[in-house]
Image (cartoon, rainbow, N blue to C red; front, side, top):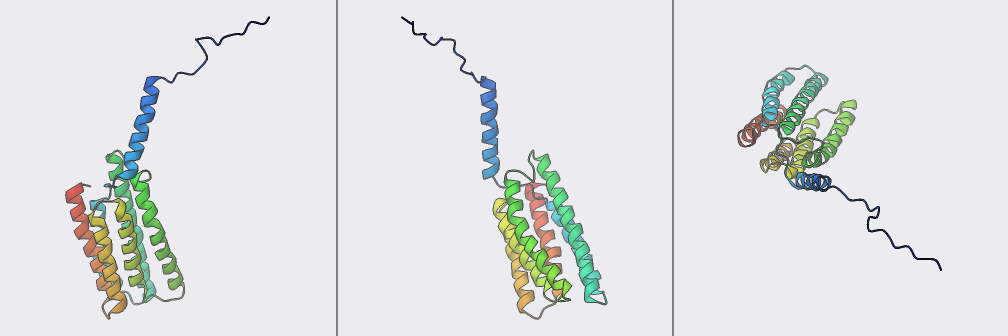
Length: 204
């Protein structure tokens, strides 16, 4: 008769060390908190620099003899101001122990980039056809919509700034006003005012 073998009490079941389980739990908790929290890494200083640079650019653009030259001046400003805001925001997020590309920062960028991308596509299409008159309204509207949407994942005053950009877009698109004036009020004035408010309340 064959004797049935009983499983040994010292089986080969793997025991997870307590410290390993605790580290996994902490990583999960941190990831959950990042995903649900607002992104406070927006750089108020970056917005203020962008706003300060837009004011002389408005004057410089208005002095150009052709629409193409006007367009070139504003494109250079867009790359400069965008680069400054992005770099300072990424640095502020790192000093807070986070990242622009993870958690709430990633949500903010995912909400911001598609609308800005569509605005850039429309800009290229119209510029290629020499249709520059609609560009100020398109810039203000798409940037405002992007800021308003992304602001849902950031501090409370950011969506308000986006809404005011859209208001300026409506004025320049529907009323006989100076496009350069609306660009100065938006990319200059609003960036300066809200940048200062963000810098004072949230630092950076």
